[in-house]
Length: 363
Ligand code: ADP
Ligand code: MG
Image 1 (cartoon, protein in one colour):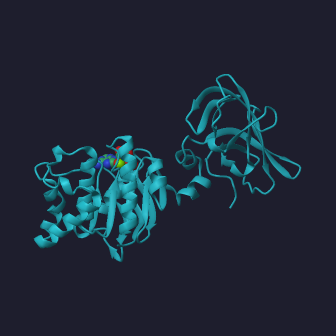
Image 2 (cartoon, rainbow, N blue to C red):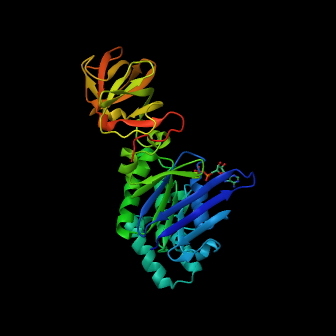
Image 3 (spheres, rainbow, N blue to C red):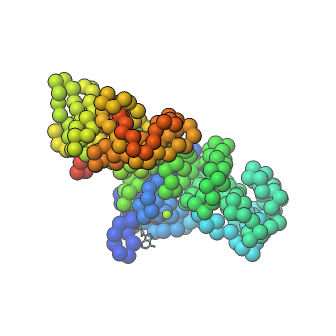
């Protein structure tokens, strides 16, 4: 096991547009860290640099107390699992799992012991004599995992390992990866574009955009206190609502008024706002909007879509020109065309600078 330190890491490809810019990151010993961001944000490039599969343009990579920036991949003691399992098609499961150990000249008895142990952990002991083409997607992914675990590496790297699986299997494998980490406590860096995977697996998550880190924190820190509008919209599903408007001072208290006047929200007195007099964007998560009698709350919404999901009811509609999504407790009475009142607890309101998107809630 080992900690990982990325220092001012940069990657420029031939086209000179930086794919990774100035990434500074410390991954703690035993931590499960998730890199999350949309496609093209530089996650895989970062991971490949750590693995040694992509040259570093600038900066350093340390694993434990070793500077590995210029070491060959084989000398870094890392195991990596990819989206496309990359199993050897002509070898059976046993050989696929043991190949790396054989190359390292581990004794056959020890190889046999480890294959048995790992295949038991992953529930693939019945599959050892099968070839990859005789396996389902989930089984192949287990073998790929097994091949990584069996090496007992200092560091696990995962690049979207569940993307090729169907939704149900993805959830199951997600639990298994989480459980494996709890057992092994091996330092792990896991790349995904899926914010649910990031939130459920990560001790901490790193939100990337355009090759840069936007925020690092525990799942609940980034959910509760997104540092900018991008993070706020990326984390949480359904996505946070955003309403353009401005803040005025009313006596001792601050009040948000949307540009079209459809939403008026008191913000309380204890909020420190930087640049509050300029235009702002109010952010409110769907699950933080409450149903209210008309004219009693922050505004009204014309309901355009109602989705009954069992224990919750989701509505989409408009407050003036602004689209609003809200998640209520189960409500069988709501229907298309309703005009409903909504209310918002000031404690759940986020405010962002209208130009930069940076969170305005003071430290
Ligand atoms: P992600 O994994 O977050 O989807 P990548 O790290 O794969 O993103 O890519 C980041 C950026 O670098 C993208 O703009 C991508 O087009 C570019 N890129 C990735 N690999 C190469 C390459 N081998 N040559 C040129 N550009 C690349
Ligand atoms: Mg990628």
